[in-house]
Length: 227
Image 1 (cartoon, rainbow, N blue to C red):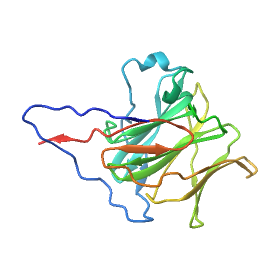
Image 2 (image 1 turned 60 degrees about the vertical axis):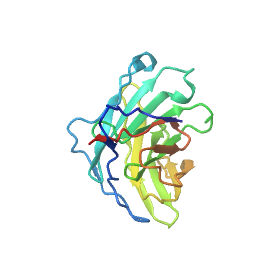
Image 3 (image 1 turned 135 degrees about the horizontal axis):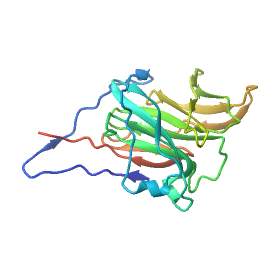
Image 4 (image 1 turned 90 degrees about the vertical axis):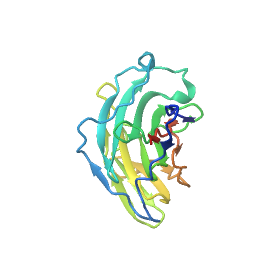
């Protein structure tokens, strides 16, 4: 599902879309830094408190190609919400006010009844373009490993979630053309669950596209600037 966030208009004012903030070639990893954000962005929608079982808390933030990113964790007590997602959820947004779009991912999503030890969202942010994989793992999982098609492997750090829900989260920004799989492993190293790296194409500039068994919705960019 894509939720378009409207851009304000004003008579006599022309809005110009900024240039992409990244210029990554095939196989090129984006430059990512963890931390350094004074006030991480937390997306809040009017009336959403009625669906939440906890407040949204920022659990990680940083910079990708010099643009801020932030991740929040929270619980949703809304079993009839369908594609809104529910139970344990998270959101990943880009830009200091979330203007480059975002994605929500949850442990319970309509139409995705499969395993719940590894719930992922692969997202292409067209304003980069940059690609990120983020998600939630169960208590069984001790590590998350990205096994790429070229034979290389990268581990993603597990991040503690909201204290009232207890799940752990991860996020990894990867090359836009990355292929392979994500493997969740238990303490002895045996695989608990595996999901494919599902992003196949970069999103159009002002859009966010997403795939994976944890995707609840995406929010497009609010990118136009007055001239």
